[in-house]
View (tube, rainbow, N blue to C red):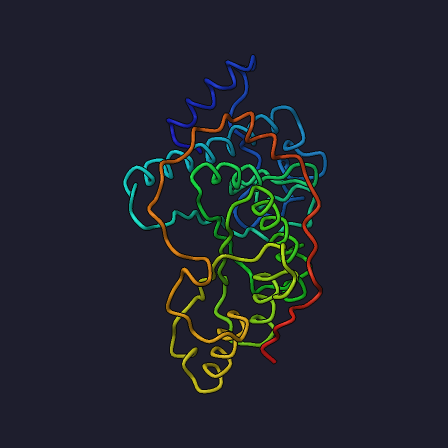
Length: 285
């Protein structure tokens, strides 16, 4: 948001809010800085001030509005086609357990312990009947350096819970190339947080496995991958008719009316994640 057009847009917004003296932040550090080493993300940092909150709200709102506009144009382009729109939401899991959530805030996801930065996105997607596609489903907290305060498990639970509460479908993918039982079991858990037989609980609409490679097709890896695919389908045999398992594509309808930004921001009120089992009931091992 530091090109001349967005600088001008921020200055206009700040002036309208009664603070013509406010400029875009210049104290957030550089790519490899830790949050506490910066003025913006540090203890009692700029992100907690009125100026910081104004900037972060303006920044995240612009991105949500942009996504809304893009989806609206896509809806017009594919109107009547048998397609389903989806939007990718990035999994910024590092620094999730730090007070400032610095990586998320930098990327425009204004998410803090007292503010949900993802449910407003899900609410925006709901007007387009679009799928929220999230990543890092294979990751566990224990697999990451504690110094990075990374929490992919909690992040996944927060984002998916928010989307399901907004009554939209959720899809996912893995972030890293993984061929082990731990990654597959974690994906299975996130795809069905409360197992295969518990009716009335949310389940993932679809999953994209990344990525096809020579490593994947090695004998041992490929045999385990086939088991994983079977478990993702709850040990059911292949079915060629999507209508039989509730995923028949219907002609795309026109998006519903635009949701006012105030209504989107109502969804920033934090809520506890939905219940999650400790482990999947369909382990590959």
